[in-house]
Image (tube, rainbow, N blue to C red; front, top):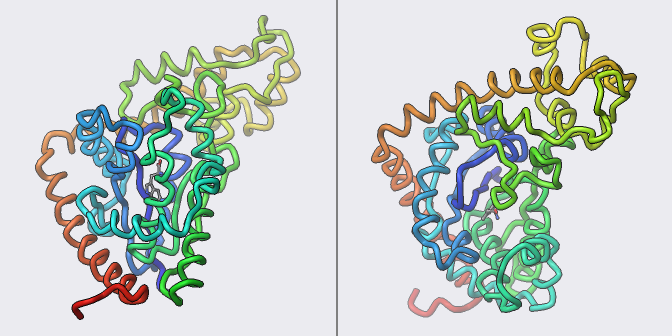
Length: 347
Ligand code: TRP
């Protein structure tokens, strides 16, 4: 079986640390490991419209912003085909046929959709486009016969639903599609990075993000106002490490070399945690440490992003090239799909 990687993001804002550890790092690893047949990254503008249909300008503007983030973290257009979802109109055709294989109640049961519906302001009137976006996501994946989908944990229900649709399709019309598999980050705390406020998830709408494009003073300000242990008032108090955002982030981002460089008096994170738990270690010190780590991590990304920003035409050229290539593949696979369904009339 061919190894075809596909993933994507909705262009609704700049990408943040949650994207980096939840999915981008894994994408870069896959890219650098090589050994795949095809690798697509899609900017899911059409999917973004399912809950931003009244704000096309925002989605449009963020196509470029997301591309800048991709390239700044090291995704490489020589190794990855980048494309824009709405420019591959075959995807809507795939979606239309898959709609027949999914029930309304199954869509309403999708945990990620359910979760999103709670936080959206649809006033009880759920647009069909939003409810059915998992079906369109199945189209995104299967139009390229993608087998490997590097995503964050919140996308698992989408991949599960895609697998179900693939099985239904194959049962009904004969072996046509391949079941995709999700690949998640290695570190559990990376699955769904908590926001700087300690809330369940880093998310634009909650305003608790550190963006890849943030300036040094923004990063610092966000780290220093992070949620820690509300009962850890005096330095000598014993503090809690669980649910303490700074430690959750240190779990994800700190490496042995950071201790050597910034906190040589501790061997590793375990020692730092033990001291905090025992008492005698202030929040200021752990925040300073985390800030240094994040500054080191984000500086090269921000600089590269600023370079790339100077030439937006070059970015759109990459997208255009990728979209032409992706569209050819989707066209070919759509023809095969329709042939297997028995709805090719003229060839
Ligand atoms: N739903 C994804 C997100 O919100 C974006 C997306 C659309 C996607 N189509 C996809 C991800 C196909 C993986 C595969 O970020």
